Length: 270
Ligand code: MG
Image 1: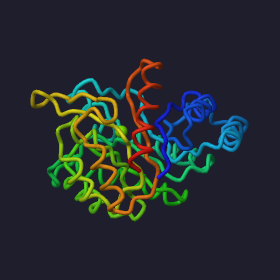
Image 2 (image 1 turned 180 degrees about the horizontal axis):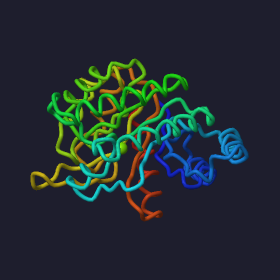
Image 3 (image 1 turned 135 degrees about the horizontal axis):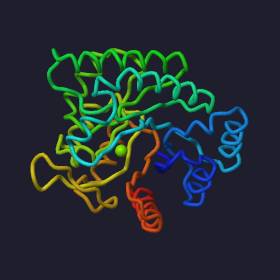
Image 4 (image 1 turned 135 degrees about the vertical axis):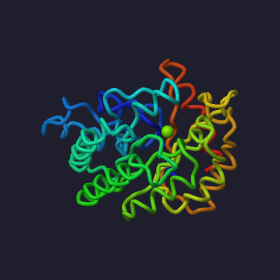
């Protein structure tokens, strides 16, 4: 299991250099902005991948107007739940998938938003149909489409995956999200979703103190995930993909320190 890190796609070449400077060989990258989609700049990114020896294991889809401020805002703004934005965003993902193909990246992943528990609701049906169309586009481009976990219990996500019924629909498993959203037990959830997992986030966090609020992210090893148990479980299910460290703080100096400490911890456990 190679160790990697989640980085920004705002300047892909600079991000690849940053990954290498941290001594890591793989990363997940947010989809680069359109200013990077020209033939010339795609070649620059591919050249940097070669020269720096850093693989981009997945591209992470994001959409304009998304905010993770609180649960209500997430429901309204994130992913494909809000029907007023759904169609436009599905078409965006088609473009992201084409971009990933040009970059030779085999996994496209996203937070699609809270999956509704009521299977009869128009929102649930709308999300199933949207993800079917996205998965079909990714399949044509030779890719997996991976859903990031944690905003709903594993069983709800599993039911959704079965309803979408597309072989290239997979999971990027984030154990901390399970706690931040107070959705499930990360280790039990991994057991339920194991066969779909093509990527993981090594992130830590604690459950919210009050119901209905968001929990807090912590440096790896300092939250409630139980990273030893998490890595042991990954081995048990036969996972061999990258261990991608995710740390969502804006202080660059602390970010680097936390990534390096997480790397050290994972090197001992993997
Ligand atoms: Mg994550």
